[in-house]
Length: 246
Ligand code: FPP
Image (cartoon, rainbow, N blue to C red; front, side):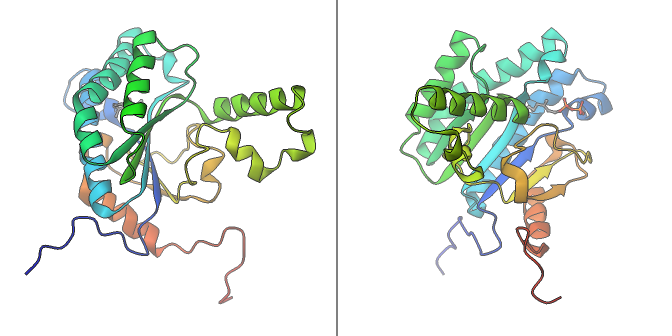
C-alpha cells in the first residue's frame, strides 16, 4: 500500500499558527540549570515544531523569539538569545531551504547588529522562492512598536502626497505592518500556562482562536501541536457575526 503523504492539512487545519514559546526559564529552573540552557532546549522544540507544522500541512508558522521588552533581561541572557538566532539560522538554513520553508523575520531592525542583519537577509533571500511552509520569526518584535512603525510609514506617505488620510482604513493599514505578506493567524498558542498576549501580533490576532497550553516550551512537540489544532477545530469562529443556530 502506498505510504500516505506526510502533509495532510484538513479543513480543520489552521492556515496560520502563531506561537508564544514561553517557559524556557522555568524549564531550566526545574532542572537547576541556567535560563540560557532552557532557551537552547527551546530551539530544539522549535525545530520539532517547524517539522511538525510542515507534516501537518500548516501553511504559516510565526514564533515569538525575542520581544522589544526582552532587552530588560540580564545582558548574558540577551546575548544568549541573539546567539541562538545566529546558530539556528546558520545550522538550519540549508535544511529549511531544501525542505521548501520560506523564512522571514519580523520586528524592528533599526538597532540590530550588522551580522544579525546579514544573517536575516541571507535567510530571507535564500528561501524567497519557497512556499511549503512560511516560517516567520518575530525578533526584536513588539505588537505596539510594530503598529507605531506602521503608522509612521503611513504618515510619511501622507506627507509625501502619495496617499490622503482618508485612504487609511483597517484594511489598507495592514500593508504597512511587518506582516503585510502574511494572512492573519487563525490559531495563537501560548505555552507554559500563562494567558496573555504579551504584545504579540496585537493587530493580527483580532480574530485568532487563543489556545493556552499547560506545558513549558522545551517540552512542546508534534503531539502538543496536534492537540492545540484539535482544540482549534472544536471552536466556532464567528468573526463578530452571530451564531446562526441561536
Ligand atoms: C520565553 O521563555 C521565551 C523567550 C523569551 C525566548 C524564546 C526563544 C527561544 C525558544 C529560543 C529560540 C529563538 C530563536 C529566535 C531561534 P521565558 O524565558 O520567559 O521563560 P519563563 O517565563 O519560564 O522565565
